[in-house]
Amino acid sequence: MTYSKKLLHYFYHPKNIGKLKDADGIGEVGNVNCGDVMKIYIKVQKAISGKNKEKEIIKDIKTETMGCAAAIATSSMITELAKGKTLEDAEKLDYYSIADALEGMPPGKLHCSVLATEALKKAIENYRKKKNPKRI
Amino acid sequence: MKRIYLDNAATTQVAPEVLKAMGPYFSESYGNASSLHKEGTEAYDSLERARKIVANMIKANPNETIFTSGGSESDNLAIKGVAFNCGSGHIITSQIEHPAVLSTCNYLEKKGFNVTYLPVDKDGFVNPEDIRRVVRRDTILVTIMHANNEIGTIQPIDEIGKICKEKNILFHTDAVQSFGKIEIDVNKININLLSASSHKINGPKGIGCLFVRGAKLEPLVHGGPQEFETRAGTENVAGIVGFAKACEIAKINDKKMEKLRDKLINKLVKIKGCSLNGGRKNRLPNNVNVSFKNIEGEALLLKLDAVGIAASTGSACSTRSLKPSHVLTALGLTAEEAHGSLRLSLGRYTTEREIDYTVKEIKKAVGYLRELSPYKKI
Figure 1 (cartoon, rainbow over the protein chains, first blue to last red):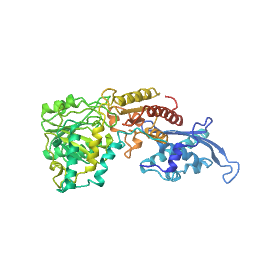
Figure 2: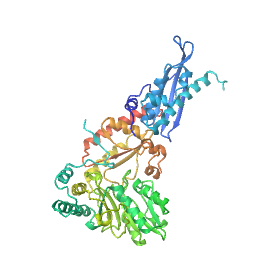
Figure 3: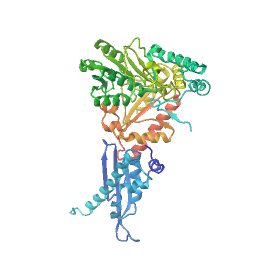
Figure 4: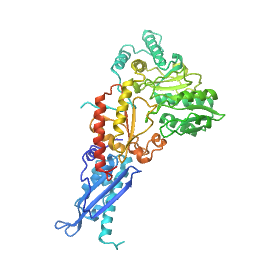
């Protein structure tokens, strides 16, 4: 099993690490028993210009991850991919777009990228529930 | 940057003396030991000289020592060799054996043999009395490793040997990790079969041996009459000569290494959320295995690799199967604890400075990884 250079780069130099104190939504997946825990914090804002004007976009995003190199790299990559996207587009991020962005992942590690997409979806869901508690 | 190699339980550097001893057997004395001409007899003489040296490591006779391709083949030959010779029966082993033993036993189960996998206590030791408890009238073999490859625990093979003798059952021990590191005397301990490997003691890869006393084995490799008609194939003379040289220079019961091991253990267990896996007593002089709370072992391994330190982990994430180490779970560790494990195995060339640097870098890496995670406090 070998990791791509890009994945290792994201493991050794992860982006957007930490908490967002005034997060609008938080998503957490995994558990210590399975070895990986990912937490994603998002800050949502309406775009004031550009093609997404008036649409809700992910203004800021951070992650805290406990796990293997693939878990740390995928959670870091998803924060980069999601930043600036509308909530609808961010939700559409799937595991292979993350794997692609990391220039491939060992097959046994693809579940890490699935976890990352689930953490982001949960954070968006959490934001929507907070904003409109009656919805759903 | 000079690398710090602390994965000597996986394999070791070939010692310069060993490499030098092997050289002529590739370029000058390249004969086939079965040939009658000068080149052949030279090879034969070297082979038999080497056999004496290797056999003497465990005080065995040369004609009880069969050269193989390594530890896995020796384990296979011992276990399948006995099983196929008997045709059917019951085998006793432990839950913490090397895959070369465990998978062979699993395979034999599929072929109709019965296998009992004995548990170990929380420190990683088999209770010899358990053998008495599970032994059956059709038990043909007990196979319990001498020292464990992950946690370094040295099993009570003298007591196990006694019970096997009393019950008239063959006893095989996988001594791949202990051979050349701790004293073994097959005249003091009742052992019928013992596996050893060259590359764990600064010898070349691809060569090992199986000690055989009072056991009939069905060969696995058929062909010529080499190795007492038990293992066909032209002998790997260069490898065998290298193995013998490695035996000659091996340090048995190395006190200096033990001291370094204890220093490393003592410093690591002081790190928050760090615990030792496997007992402190009856442990190989070169083995350290610890678990860090809220750390994933593979991430720690890669962080250490980046600062020049080679280590190993029992974390599920580091394997293709995504299952945590069967040894650590047999000790009763939770999946979480097994995930956070790190094995550091010292070698012939490990220095105190390397140990100090390693402790410093482990502290840094553990702190960094905890900082990345949602669990910053232990």
